[in-house]
Amino acid sequence: MSWLINVKSVDAAGAAVIDVNYKKMKMLSPNGNGDSESAGTSVMDRICKAIASTGFTMFANADGEITDVQGRRKNRSSRSFMPLPELSPDQRAPTRKAFSTQFSPRTIKEQMSITTNFYPVDPVDNGDTWKNPSRSLRRSP
Image (cartoon, rainbow, N blue to C red; front, side, top):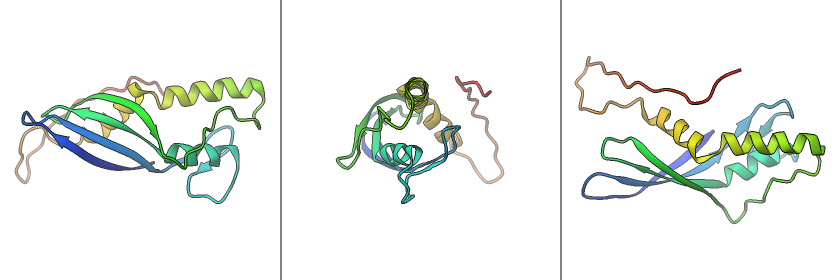
């Protein structure tokens, strides 16, 4: 997954409004592999292409902590990828649930917080170390 991150504004207190757009998406799945840059038309390729043309807005405080994530924005070229007629009815519901969970505001906030958590809160010099604890709300199988 790759993103284009654009800081739209920073207020006097240091809080920022940031637009994030997915640029590329590759996914491995029991339903098959997908790639937003593939010429393929498989279900997973189409899902990756649809996701790669969306974005969201996140809000960060002056310390760089992501405080909120709001909705996915659709690019004009984006096509809805649900329902997926190629999937059987018993495959559609779990697929829809998995994507709704994986791309919910809460999980996007968690993913982006982990991404930005690498940076120190305070200025550092060469050789300094810092700790930024984080926790994942999702469990691995």
